[in-house]
Structures are given as C-alpha cells and as structure tokens.
Length: 421
Image 1 (cartoon, helix red, strand yellow):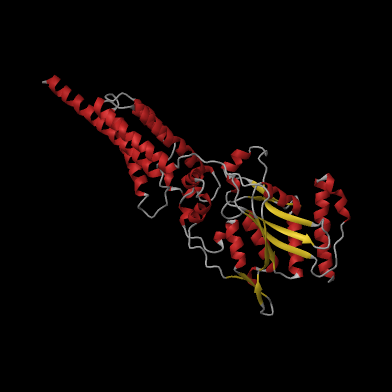
Image 2: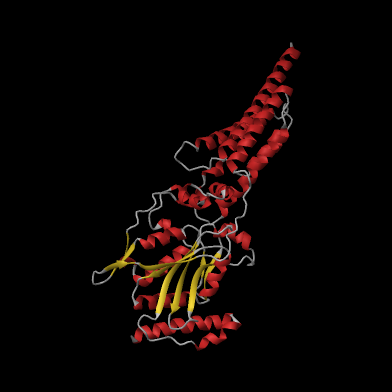
C-alpha cells in the first residue's frame, strides 16, 4: 500500500508540475493530491482512427493514465509529437532524421482535438494490477521528462504505437503476456495498402520509394506498427499471473464518437494507373504520327525522360542518403535514377555525328527498362501497377529512337559507299 501510494504520488506530482511549467492555466492543478486507494489509477490504451492528412493516414496510439479520485489528474501520453517549424524539418524528414517526442496533455484536450477532426477514438481499459498501473505511470512520467522524451522516429519499427506497446510490456513483463492473434498473413506493404487504398497517389508514392524489405511477411508483433492492428491484438492478448491465473489483457472498451465531421480531401480524379495508361495511349498515337511523317517528336522523349529523371532523383536520394527503413532495398533505383537526365541531351544530339554514342546509350536504356518490366514477374520486389504503362512508354520510345538511329546509320553508310565507287 505504501509503495503504491508513493508511486501514485510521483505520477500525479510530476505530471502536474510539468504542466504547470508549460501552461499558465494549469497552475491551479499543482495542489492535486494522490489518493491512497489501491485502485486509484485508471490506465487505458487509446487508438485513433485514420485521418485525412498524410501523417494521420494510419491512425494513432496513446496511453491514458487517470487518478480516478482527482478529475484534474487525467492525462494522455502521446509519442507522436513533432513540430513542422523545427529547423530544416523537411530535409531532416526526407533523410530519416526526424525526432519525435513523448508529451503528456490533459485528456479532455486530446479528445477534443480528434473529435473536432471527425476522428473516432477507442479506449481499451487495461486489466492490470494496481502495482502494474503505478509502475507504468512511473515509467511514462520518467520518459516524458525533457532529457528522456525525444527519440528518432522510424515509421515501421519505432513509432507512436510500438513505443506505447513496448512501455506497457515493460511494466507488465513481456513474458507475462500471451497473444492469440493469428496475424494477418500479409507483408508490410500489404498492411500499408489497407490504409492507402483510398489515397492511390499516396500509395503510389510510398510504393515507389519502399523496397523489397517491406515485401517480407510481417508476423504478429511486426504488424503492430499500425495502431489498429495493435488494438485488435490487444483484444486477443491474455495476462498470465504468477499464480497461473489467466485473464484478458483488455478489461473494457469505450468508443468516443466524434463531434465534428470527417473531412475528406479530394484526391486527383484519375488514379496513377489510369493516368499512366492514358500517357501510354498518347505515346502510341505519337508513334503512329511520327511514322507517318518519318520524324521523331523529340519533345515527347524529353517529357518522358524528365519524368523518369525526377522520380529517379527522389528514389536515388532516399536509396543512398536516407535513414528511412526499406528505402535502401529498392530495386527501382536501377531504372529510376538521375542518369535519365543524361539521356535527354543524347536524344537531342545530331543523329549522324553521334550515332555510335546514341546507339550505345539506347542499348543501356533499353536493358534497364527491360529489367524494370521483369520486376513484375521476378520475385524480387512488388511494383505498383502504375509503373507498367510508364515503363512500356519509355521502352517503346527507346526502340523507336534506336530504329531511327540505325536507319540513319545505314543510309549514311550506303551513301558513303556509293559516293566512293
């Protein structure tokens, strides 16, 4: 009892003191006193539905700790805090050096923020002992201190959900938990697609930069980087006490329906697949037109190669310089890299004077594009279907340019022979 009282007092005093320093309107809460009741603390797992912003697309996780005898001592511990205004935020985000931190805020503020955005929140009360609640509260308070709260964010392996899961398991002892969830039997990429299905362009961008590392199967624990997955796994988890008693990990679930309306941000009206098949059809029409007038529309080649090069800059930069997970195992870097820009001046060079260079460059380019097409059948990496029409468009134009270069070379050769004799 005495130990529980001291830990509960530590929780309440530390959190309220922290908020008194951060918010002027919370000074009155410093007079809150912890209770000595055995079950004074209420602990719950909070899971938020996905939102419309890209960083909210997969949902969110937090932990609620409440002193039931003190209405003001009710906080959500949130590992998903970051600041867009931080110096060089965009650059640091791109290279995978984004720092997130743990913050504690009044529960009412947490609920209001998500409710106004039209996001539903699920609260799962944890069926743990008073000592375990007190220990979890103590760990969270210590972790929320300025010197401890910052961590290097990793979307797949170290995020707001995995942090919440790990600190809960640390308080309970991971060997005292048994999860009976079968797992989804999906890869990391499959799990991501469940949440990006309504945002095809976002899904296309993610597929372009994530490599074969996300195509391996995700076991039960690995799939818990997604908030909803961990929430469902928590419902299938049991606690094994020292005396052998088995009880559910989740005691009760409360659903907070939002007050506001979930605003849907309209995506581009055409999906990437439809868009690039339209591009492919247009390229075919241009090829027919070029054959009719026996002249290449080089602006089409410049546009396609520029598109390939722009995508290549992003893919290559992440591949070579970013610390983000899975971006350095991306086979697409062979076809999508800045070398595509080198093809543009080669395409525009004089056909007769630089024909050998042009033919050599086109051979390399065609080889790369054929490899890109083979990725659709080889078990190396899953490729977004929208890449297929783009690859075909690039390959067809490369073949057309190669044929014209060879035809020009033949004409020049026979003209030289006839002139000599």
